[in-house]
Amino acid sequence: MTTPEPTEPAPPSTDGLGRFMVIITWVIILALLTFFFNQWYKKYQMNTHATIITSDGIQQTVLQRNYLNHYVVEGLINNQKVMFLVDTGASHVTVPGPLAEKLNLKKGMRTTAQTAGGEVEVYQTIIDELVLGHIVLHRVKASINPHMNDDEILLGMSALKNIKFIQEDDTLTLISNTR
Image (cartoon, rainbow, N blue to C red; front, side, top):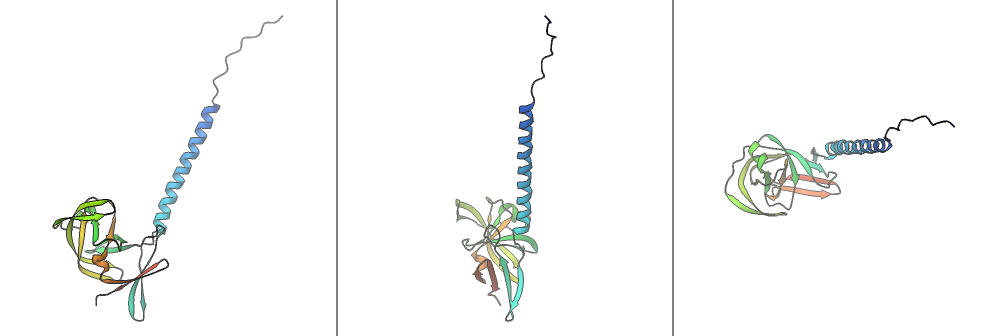
């Protein structure tokens, strides 16, 4: 009778750890792809550039709706580049607090505004010059909302009342009412 040779214990299995690492790797890859695709999509699908056309001798600024179904467009406030979100439901042009500081807008009288999130305190201000495509508006009433942290300015009715706008399909055409 032969005695079995002593065998060394088998090393612990790493199969479970290997599977776990493969799963984690795929989750990270998918998360990174999602992040980069979203950044690319936002950059190239925001349609932030207005097109200026002339029709029957009348200049028009044409905006395309973005992937969120909003009209977002680059413009100027007091010769500084900004991003506007057209908001016909806003009474005034509304500037986020941090952005108002960068634009050197002066806080005027404090007042209360009704927003989708409820009542908030805002400050009245005047925008000396607002440029949107071919349209130039002067002395536009606006509000500074210190509770907003966005980079987009709500282009409300205090500016839009001076603009004729026509919405058709995914296009918003703006024509200046001021002569």
